[in-house]
Length: 344
Image (cartoon, rainbow, N blue to C red):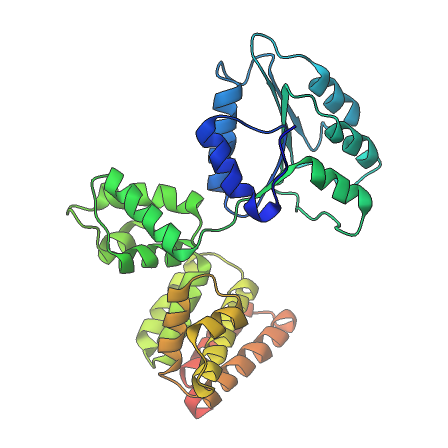
């Protein structure tokens, strides 16, 4: 069997295997970036099952139809007119249940002609590193985490896809597109196509993006808090209307607004303490540096006392929300109070 890779190296080594067309015997796929996961799974299928997924050499198990016996039977079946058999297991937690010892034994003795891919999607990937059997199972597989990509890599990827569509986009606007879509390649891939088709010029503009891309809740909540802290009250009320039209519950909206206010407070604390953007990123687990920059820019427009008052107001309304018959009215009340937080 091939040598197993460390989890942190899994994605890199999988890409090397895809380039050579030489895959190992067992992989565990997990992570937030579904686009990369599906692309990698597609490459394995293309290599090992060139005639499609309806032949003898492809077996798939889902959480509701998985059994250790059926799994072992699929692995023992020799490939027909091909060098290898592909066995996929979707959304079944191999680290739990009475069959775990049997599964561990099967994975420890995989034949060279089989490739097993265990995919965690809706089921969380949480092996217990303290248990010997979990460690043994992990030693049998190459663990590949499909993580959300770093800022520089994602911006380059966006530019490359726009170039394929014969369009250009600036770094700033690529970062903006990342921000309003949440930064997942699975979402970005479709939005890039929409923006490229809509844009009438060689270079995509922010106006093109705003015309066809629906921003995620997190982005709209940030726009709202940004407008409030900048005293742009009319703009804040328009953004509130946009939030309400998203049909999210007032509880979820207030949670998102509260999170952004806490991040602004953290940014203001960083400014007061002469801390850098990178320290804010670590403090708040912010994904991209340009998001931290935007928070710091907004925090400079307000004061530490105002940020504290805003966070306390959000906490108060959130606490009272479960006991009120009109949660949407309390949300609007919160926005009005936040608009005049410097006078509260």
